[in-house]
Amino acid sequence: MINYRQYITLEIGKRSAQPCVRGLRITVYDVLNMLANGMTSEEIVEDFPELTSTDILACLAYVADKERKIAVIYDSEVAI
Image (tube, rainbow, N blue to C red; front, side, top):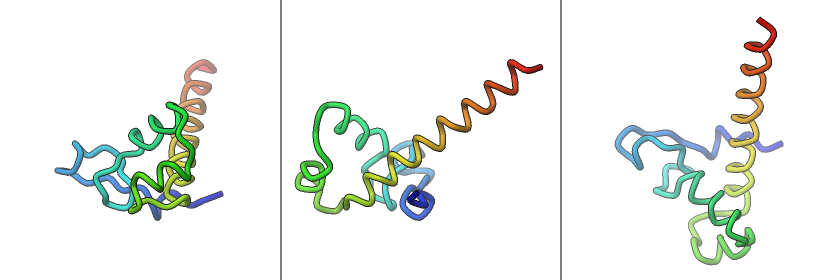
């Protein structure tokens, strides 16, 4: 699994502190939206040459980890 912490950054004053790729102005949401609209990783890198395929995988890993944490919190709230 990719250590997304090396690739995903949060900076106050940049894109409203949304998670971005390596300090660029491209957010995780931007990348996920392109994938959801049917673009391949190769097409995204072609359109945004500052991105790499590893950056795209890091975006997916970031969201997967975030989702896992939400599920764990939800499960613990249900158990109470």
